[in-house]
Length: 117
Picture 1 (tube, rainbow, N blue to C red):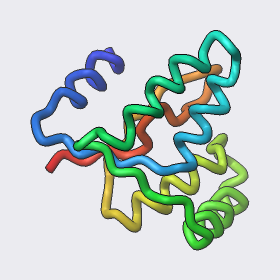
Picture 2: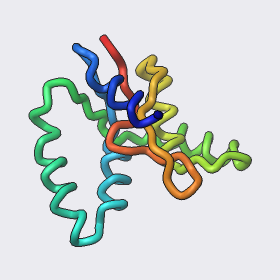
Picture 3: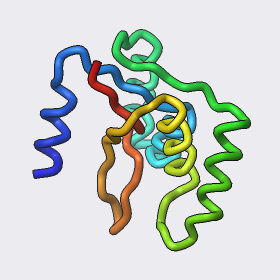
Picture 4: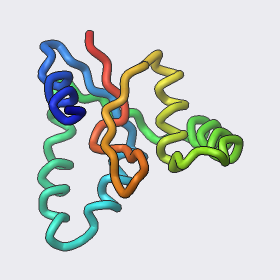
């Protein structure tokens, strides 16, 4: 059911997808095996030309705010990338996130944040 909702959400007209270099790095790390690397490479090569995707550049300020949240929320199983994504979402005024469940914890997938225009 969640997958179907995510697919429907992504098919909205005028959907603007916002992600970060940290999320792309995490995805690349997760697809580092030889059999997955080609899929990631194909995906990454399409990102710069995708008209509905905006990539937020890694920056020190967002990193440190994410790190502060990461350390403050020891009761959560959020990755550092999750916490940085939350900081960027606050900066951008974004409220919706596309995520997937993996090994009993929520993980970022290709896009950290989504915003329907």
